[in-house]
Each structure stands twice: as structure tokens, then as C-alpha cells.
Image (cartoon, rainbow, N blue to C red; front, side, top):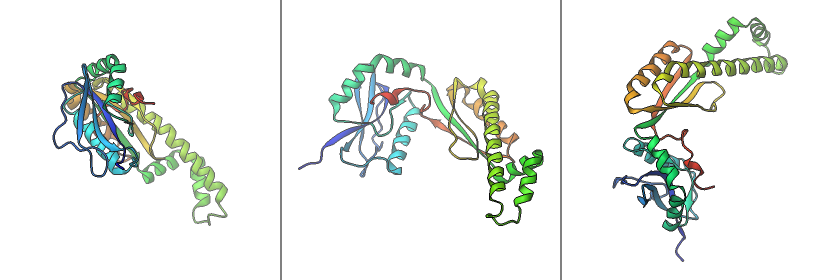
Length: 251
């Protein structure tokens, strides 16, 4: 008996978007990506087995690669990763139900793409600065230095809590400073949750095509001013994952 098949939905695009012949989807082997159209919009999809496990790193990479590549040439509304429906009729019904909203959202995203700025504190540099500025923390550090962990457990916990609080406060300040420094070159921003305890900045920006060069230059200047303290990287251009509601297409 043949395994049941379904359609994995990647994103919503204008109806005139055509996947390239070499576009590869999720699955093993990768599925062929096609477009299902309804009126002014279309869904990028590929066939997958309904019993096939999803969520492998290779699947997430394929999903992001397809959406990010699409965003370089056309507006796209990412659909939540792992969204699978039973067939073309189901896709058509979803597009019909949300066509006006999707068309309006795509129009707003025309010539706009996401960039994400992520930075992490250099641990030694941060702690060194913190202990220099905070006398109580420095005294605790002196108390635990060279002592067995069992004997200095209470002091180590208190010191760790103080450092954690300092990181959080500094993170909030750095995120605000980043938004202030580059905001004039962006359409919108979306602060993101930290992905690591030493995260210094993590903010997504929606940037218009005409402002990309100035935005990148402003990010580079911000990073250069903090290069000893923060290891920063700029990710993008990306699909606008943090600026659309298309992930709610299927609950």
C-alpha cells in the first residue's frame, strides 16, 4: 500500500512568482517545489509523506534556504515550519480564505527584507568590566578565588546572580542603543528573545531596498564601537520571519 502523501507549505507569494527548476524542498530525498495559485497569491509547496518525520536540521535548512532565496526576488510571507496539508484542494481553500489579507501584506513587503543583528558579550571582557565597576561583586570574586567549590558555593551563587542581572540590564541597554543607532534606516524592528545567557543584542529589522547600504554601514559602525566587548554578526537578507502573521495560516 502506497504511503499517504501531503503538501508542505513554505510561504505565500504573489501569483506571478515561479520556483526555479533547481529549488529543493524538505524531505529525504528533497521534494520538488511548486506553486499553487489562487487569484493574486500563491503558495510554495512540495510533496512529503504524511508519516515522514519533520524537524531534522536539514529540513529546517531547506525551509529557510527556499524562503530566504525567494525574498531576494519577491515578497514572501513565511508559513510556520512544519505546516502540512492533505493536498492541492486544501491549499486552494486556505488561499481563498485569506487572499485579501495575504495580498495586502505582500504589497507592504514589496522591496523590503529582514536583517537580524545578533551579538554576544565576550565573557572575560564583560566580567572584567563588571568587577571593576561593582565593588560588592569584586569582593565576592576574591572570596571564591582559589577556594574549593563546595566551600564557596553560596558566594559563587550570589556572584553568578549578580553577573546574570548585569548581563540582562546591559542587554536591554544595548538593544535600545542598536535600535536608536540604525532605526532611521529601517521600516520596523522586532527585539528577539536571547538565544544564550551572554547575548548582548538580538534584534530583527525590516529594511527597504533603498536603505540597505546605509543600514549595513550603520550596523558596522555600531559593531566597531563595541568590538572589544561584543562579538557581533549581521544575518541577512532574510525572509521577514519576524514581521508577518502568515505562520497563523494553519492552527
